[in-house]
Length: 252
Ligand SMILES: [Zn+2]
Image 1 (tube, rainbow, N blue to C red):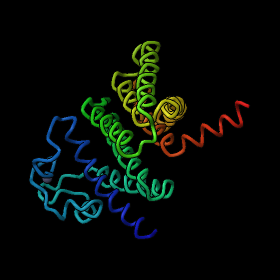
Image 2 (image 1 turned 90 degrees about the vertical axis):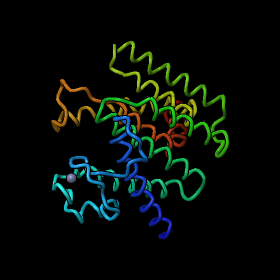
Image 3 (image 1 turned 90 degrees about the horizontal axis):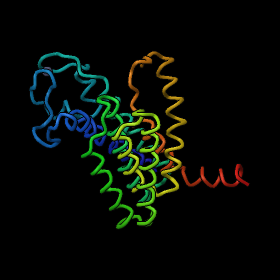
């Protein structure tokens, strides 16, 4: 248990570090493999010790070794956050094939959410890859969601968001629609509907908090992708329980 927990923390830090690379490079249409990591200011290639997740940042005291520019605190924060979520998922799911699915799922969610937060954009290439991995998992590895369920989830989920986009006249972007359609392929119909429902609750509360703490003003566009992601994470881990609780207590 302890060994497994440690392994997941280390894995989370490494994946978080890779997510940092993707967040920076994918929107700029740069390769995520080549060249190796460089300082964003002076472009000097970084040494491997600088690249150790979290530790590298503190060894450098948050500054580039060469040009002394500040390195964003977000790099270690994303790494620590990913490690925390990996560990948390392990405690909820336990070690199983499902855990691998959940870890890949949330890695995509974190990457897509931060890119959306930064650029108000959900990139087609991330959504396509996310969809493909979801299909592979459901058909060949896990088999928890049937092919019919995947396509119903994807089509209906996407259609609902499209409808909302039309009604709200652009409150929802094309990226959000494609993102939910991709989630349908991972989650199937029921959990996708739950994700949409939860994303509006979380989005409402989240937007109020962002305004209350003056992180965003009324004029700012608040990207919806991160709220969809939080909802999808909850649905993936607890969706089945939430739905059966709902059917037992509320509907009766
Ligand atoms: Zn530098």
